Image (cartoon, rainbow, N blue to C red):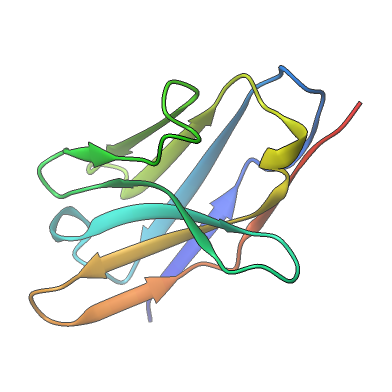
Length: 117
């Protein structure tokens, strides 16, 4: 059974930081591209950052320089470090695992991040 379990969300003031974690089980973690996405009510889920099996990362300009994705294959865990948080970063953050070679995609249940004073 595949599970992606996110943790680390919460309420933080503008300018603050959080570290999200996503622990994976039931998959060959090292083979997957891992990603973080976020979604607010009424809007489409949007990409936050991805990291390939080889460690290459990608993120949109809206979070570049503020958010950092990393992975620990020994722990089957992917992280998202969120710095200099803004109110517009408020969303549910979802962990994603993709192995395009075999057509597998999995999602976690999400963790809420709220940036407010």
